[in-house]
Amino acid sequence: MGAKILYFWTANHLMQFNSFAFAVFLPIVFLIYWFVFNKNVRSQNLFILLASYFFYGWWDWRFLGILMFTTIVDYFLAIRIHKAASEKTGKLWLGLSLFMNLGLLCFLKYWNFFVDSWITAWSSLGVHMNPLTVSVILPIGISFYTFQELSYTLDVYKKRMEPVRDLVGFAAFITFFPQLVAGPIERASTFIPQFLKSRQFSTTQAITGCRLILWGLLKKVVIADNLAVYVNNIYENYETLPGLVLLLGAVLFAFQIFADFSGYSDIALGTAKLFGFDLIKNFNNPFSSKSITEFWRRWHISLSSWFNDYLFTPLYTSLRNWDKAGLAASLFITFFLSGLWHGAGWTFIIYGSMHGLALVYEVLTKKQRKKASSKINHYLYNNLSMLLTFSFVVVSWIFFRSVSTQQAFGYIHKIFTGFTDGTIDTRYLNALWLVSLSISIEYLCRKNEYAVFIPSKRMPSYLLFALEVIVGLLVIDSSITLNHDQFIYFQF
Image (cartoon, rainbow, N blue to C red; front, side, top):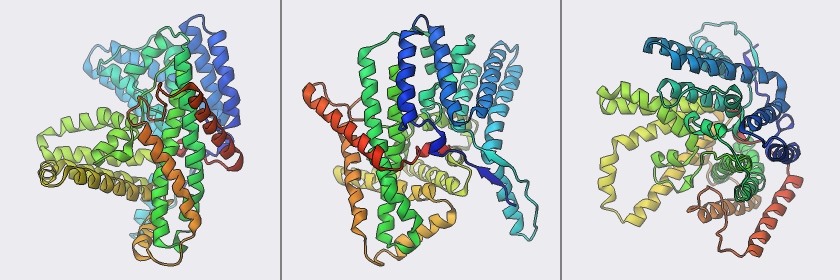
């Protein structure tokens, strides 16, 4: 029997932001937090910690043990790192933290992938091996909270902050339920201080939080989940559909994954605001990017900045004597690992490698492209760059969405070879109104503080209320009529 990973992340076992369970959980926690545990910061942190454990344990209480274990170990290791008498000793304690966190992540997420790949490689040479079969339930959010914990021990080691002496506050930082399972990945040096200072209720902040939640639900429930119906049908039947429909499906998935993940992030930001916290903005109108470099400054900002600070920068520092070759190698390795971070599969590795190669190309041709742009109409050049960037991202996401490399290559091959095959079912065109809605929201919010449409203060209150009622009704209608997919990034 081949090695097997059991991904246990169905919607029925998660307290998702768009679930009835969360709709009951959130107001109860909110009221108790502000009216019962408002005496001091420590009691608020204790309640947040308990609520977060309940939230995570709703999925599977057994995996609370891993979360608690790594939290406690990193708490004490950071103190050891800070007290280390020498740099060598400090590195030893840091290495222990890296080994524990990355070791658990690699075993739980990648063990069977590496075993299967190793066996397949030897089988191609005629050597047959018996696989070591391990059934693994992948803990939800382990990739996110592992990186958040690592930012803490690394920041303490780099002396960017001192270790926290409040275990409850530190544990609340690690397990904070609004961003526990899918980010944003917060930096310890900027987020932990929010757990150590007094928090007072703010009506303005609460209203902003509710609006972020509302518009995040619009993105997820109305746009992403409706697009998922079309996208799933196209990918499941790609062998029998015309290439033009497959091209449409690839574009629709781009807007699905954006609405899904940015919707989650907006809800996370809004929920955090209800409790007096500010999270990092995770998206900034990424489809307006004119290069892959710019795209990664606008897409999943917390992850790309984490990789930049904790992997690319130290890697490039060690390879700087290689000049451009060192820069190219550092970029490619960073995005190769970024692809692997997304999932244990060759599709994700190809996805990350594609972006790594694109970034290497942009770095090595920066001067030539700048010179060429001066000879072309500025408006034309920018729009062409935006179109090419979006097209590249869409193609790379075919690998991201496909269940295997065979499906991904077959899907792309069918786009080019069967573009005019058959007739196009007009029902697929109905999805374009969802794309238009997504584009409209992003365009209207492009100058706002958050990557979600928050109407101007100049809008009359009755119009604002009417708009929010309409959004609420759309969310309720879609919640009733659709079988909702869980948030895409919950699998990572």
